[in-house]
Image (cartoon, rainbow, N blue to C red; front, side):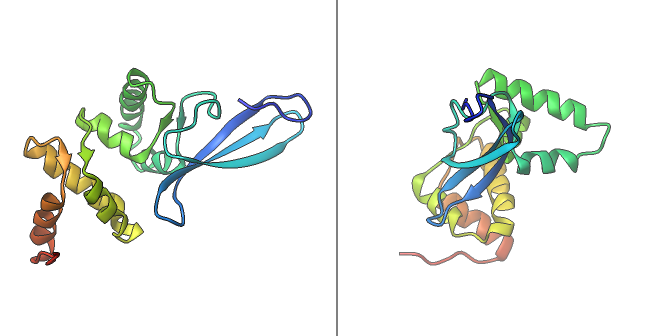
Length: 164
């Protein structure tokens, strides 16, 4: 944690999941000094928030997803996801971590597949990630590959990209 110039502790107030200009996933951490009301924001690589986040936090995207869950189911989902995060020593609950908690598994991504996913338009990227990971888990696979991406693309769009 940071100490402000006034001597007060900087408290984490929010976390945004972002993509940097080069397509890398980052987190924008917002902190506040409560005594003097000074705010700062720091962009860090995904997962590297040690010393910045002072408690278990939900990212803005994850909070938005939780807000869309029916009110009777939200407390159970919150408990499940926070328990999952604590057992894995995560301080930030992200949109993807909710899926991992729901499936109980973590699906790895081949480097080429992750790079190709970054080329998917942002509005559909999260849906594509969920569907690809769900398909991999349904097949008993532990990773998403380019071949799996091509199969899913063919299933949904009736075609496969011809890449050399």
